[in-house]
Image 1 (tube, helix red, strand yellow):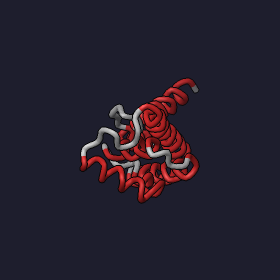
Image 2 (tube, rainbow, N blue to C red; image 1 turned 60 degrees about the vertical axis):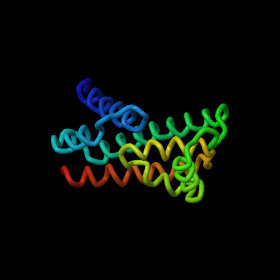
Image 3 (cartoon, one colour; image 1 turned 135 degrees about the vertical axis):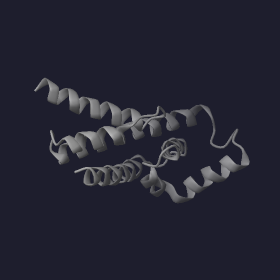
Length: 141
């Protein structure tokens, strides 16, 4: 039982950290655990999705907090301002791509900085993260 919980907590931690600014390898952890067949796929998929979504929402919240101190686009280059404008125009829909390496974290941070609405942001992130992990689960099953 203890080993079972340890493995699930390891997946949770890996997925959470991978969705913040820190690098991580939650996809590899999930792929390994799915391929071992020690846990139900739905359980691994659920834990990875939840943890990664919560990590992304932490990044969104950090962007929201920074917006209190640093006005949007106050010290950005012209190229960065165009990127921020694109996120602003697309709204929470852009957060469907929060699963992408490197730029996904930026989307989440920008979403918070731009004060995109919480519920649509959460749902878009959740759908994007679920889709990525569902493909990994399917591939390594």
